[in-house]
Amino acid sequence: MNEIVKRVIEHYKEPKLELEYSNPFELLIALILSARCLDKTTNKITKEFFKRFKTPCDIANSSPDEVNMLISSCSMHNSKAKSIFELSKILCDKFDNKVTDDFNELIKLPGVGEKTANILLAFGFSKPTIGVDTHVARVCKRLGISKTTDPK
Image 1 (spheres, rainbow, N blue to C red):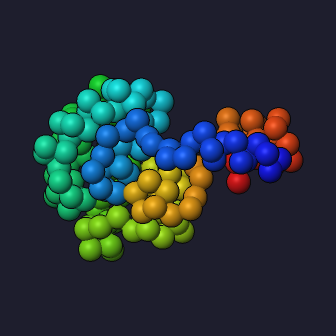
Image 2: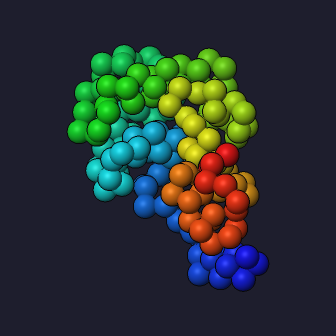
């Protein structure tokens, strides 16, 4: 197992995301939009989205319909628009218009699960976390790194 982990670290010295973002807020929105949506499509959407919305309060002061209109080419855009609008209201009101770097607070936000929170913490805040989904868990079990396929 140590050899596998060593090789992964050597091969992926500086992992990067295909999503385009310039701050934790943009990354959070991109991660939510990227669920069941190609990164290329997500990047196209966010390019226009962030011309209109620069902060969580910008979104909170708009409407779910406006958010939905801007992300309509993304899969599951209705539920994603609602989540983005609601989490933006929380970030605006509770976190002074900033994205928190507290895992337990992140997973309370609409549309944010453990995988999204961990990826945001790793790439947005340089924290030592790993976004694990069912595929990662399955491969880790197959390689003997883990005994379970449960991402948790």
